[in-house]
Amino acid sequence: MRDAASPVSGLVIVDKPAGCTSHDVVQRVRRALKQKSVGHAGTLDPLATGVLVVAVGECTKLVSHLQADDKRYDVTIALGAETDSLDADGETTATAAVPPLDVATVERAAVRFVGRHPQEAPKLSAIKVGGRPLHRRTRRGEDVEAPIREVELHELKVESVNPTEIALSLHCGKGFYVRSLARDLARALGTLGHVKTLRRTASGAFGIESALYGDDMTAEAIKERLIPLRDACGALRRVDLTDEGVAHARHGRPIAPGDIVGDDWRETSAEEPLALFAPDGEPVALARRVDERIRVVRGFTSAGDAVVSP
Image (tube, rainbow, N blue to C red):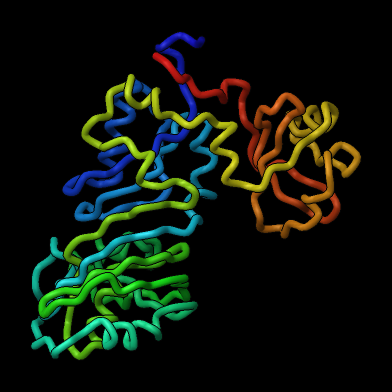
């Protein structure tokens, strides 16, 4: 067992409370563990609650890959008003009457948003335009067009409809803005709208059922829930190496097919991240396929095990 003061590595799934930022949650973990190397995989707005994947130590090297995971949300859209932030924390910018609605009407309007489609980002968002966050430029009074990006909504289910709001459950891909959907769906229904409540129920393989509530993050509680690096790497495609392959990986050298166990890696694209493992089951590095070899992107240190108890 490693000393309690030593750095730890792993993932902790946090149920973010409303009213705090994702950065606030990261700071709480840093203070609890007395460790600087902490990050998160996917920002949640202050209003939103739910799954925030927080990476500690060596697991911070996984963040860019975990950010690309699909997300699941439960959202309530308030009808009749649009706000500058497109959620309930913003200032009302316009109002409109709400036509009579039922589940079937909302489902017909929502069909156009399922699948790949262009989406305009909220004016108050962290997406960068000209190298600066859009929300900062907007708040300074700059007239900047919000970027339009191709996003994907895998599934939308209408949970309930009443005269003032609609409730949906969503399964979406990377870069999808639920606030933009609230705006666009309300307009498609002949009114205006904004996000009233938003809860992320899953991020990739990590669901809300295993989350630690964000106000209960003591060092002991975090360490009890910490997912070890070897298990966190299970979110990526696993590639097993021979001892010789491990030696090459540790030194950043290309790994030839003869030092790779199995042929599944040959099915991967150059963009897909790979998690390399030693024969003893310990993670060695992150890598990608380059032609008929594997090249290391980032290596893990030997201190990559999570501490399970303080």
